[in-house]
Image 1 (spheres, rainbow, N blue to C red):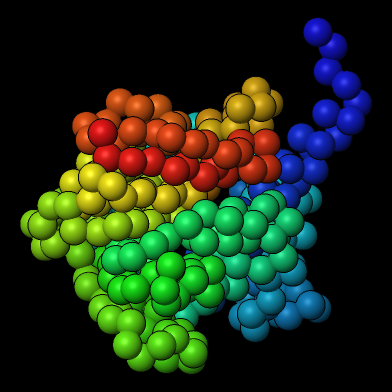
Image 2: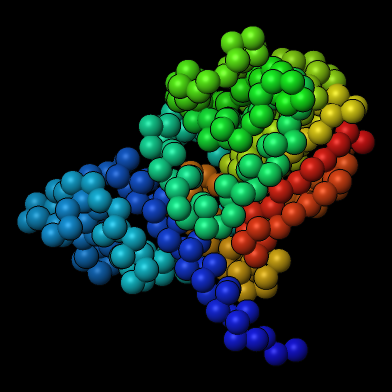
Amino acid sequence: MATSTSSVAFVAVIIAAVVTMLCAQTAEAFITYSPRACDYRHETCICLYDDDGCSNNNSCHPNRRNFAAACLSGIITVPLITSIKSAGALTPDQASQNYDTYADTYDKLDGGSIATSLGIDEARTKLLGMARGDVLEIGVGTGLNLASYRFGEGGVTSLTLVDISDGMLSQAEARIQQMNIDKNIPIQFVKADATSELVSIFGENKFDSVVDTFSLCVMGNEGAKKCIEEMAGVVKPSGKILLVENTRSSNPLLGSYQDLTASSAADLGGKGCVYNQNVGEMINKSKGMRLEKEESFAAGLFRSFVCTKS
């Protein structure tokens, strides 16, 4: 069946948005670890800083617009597309160290207008509004989800926030202190590896709601499967597991693009996120978790999942 012009245009727009997001993330990785970034094959210095370009000594001042322009013109996206290898995962120690580094600037990369346009904010708000009772959130990061919870009677009555990074937990705690949350609602911060330590720390059947947004991709496929089973272990039999995750698109063109770029995107600026996972399949094959509802956003690049204990 022939593909309509509108469908092709839609996919093109989505790909452009994804490339822009990846370029922004890649820029941050270069800014964090190097004072400059150069494509030595073309002897081209990509200035991440001044609008005037690189100086003679190749030193610059931060500005991502130059990097994004370079990406979209092909300087960076060509190696992204042509370097094909199996996408790996961050180890817990790597994740802890790397995300300590990302903590101060994380919100600029994972929030903002692009996230809104792709439907991420909508997915967060819709799903997290379902959280009730004693809530556990894993991979809390800087606390981007906190504003989406409804605290108090009929909503969140206690909140436990887990992350493997001290830096991220510090950012989340600072965010909490700026929010007007009832002081009678217990909130605790726990450093833990969600792929192996949830049940051992909290015990089984402890939480009414377990939440994760965009953490599974950083754990790799095997780590994500272990994390799903850990979440299933700590949720109560009557509870819900609420997920918003990066997933492989159901659109063949976009899915193929993700497969081609997943490893390079994770290595170069995606903070280790392998963004072409089949999360729905992982849930269906897991021990202890049953998928009740799945909703797709941005041509399936992101999906929300409502699950229960099986």
